[in-house]
Amino acid sequence: MRARLIILGFVILALIGTSFLLWRSTPEQTVKRQAHRLLDCLEKGALSGNTTTDKVEFLGELLAHSFTVQAPYPVDSGTFDQTQAGRSLRDFHDSVMSCAIRRDKALVKIEAENIGSYQTVLSVEISLGPRRQHHFKYNCLIEFIRSGDNWIAREIILNPI
Image (tube, rainbow, N blue to C red; front, side):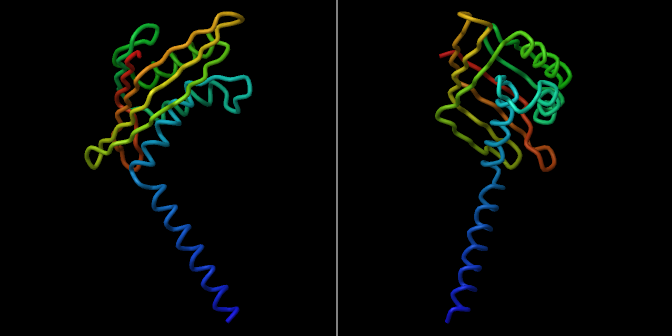
């Protein structure tokens, strides 16, 4: 009887683990993870484990070779390549003391087999120094395309709230 309970326990654990892995690998969860990674690249904090150089390299892996940004000032808008994005990220990190991004009400849609979108409300806190803090709030839409096994961002749209 005891051996059956042990085997049953292992079977249940295997089913739970398999279910989690299948859920985690769904396109919706993958797009959500990629969007969070992209937004994490923009953040800068005193206790951040990654350097700006690491984030620039990682950002290049998350973006299409040519991608579009539509946003109000002070964010640059237009069509960019990965090199320009890396340069802009480095310049941004050099010009701020910290940047924190909070995401609310995230919604992921898979519109076709290889197109997905991530929508959220972003609250951005930027510190340029003592008593020089700025708060921005945006409706954010990031459109992703599947490139091989990866989902990469091809368009980022920020609308101020």
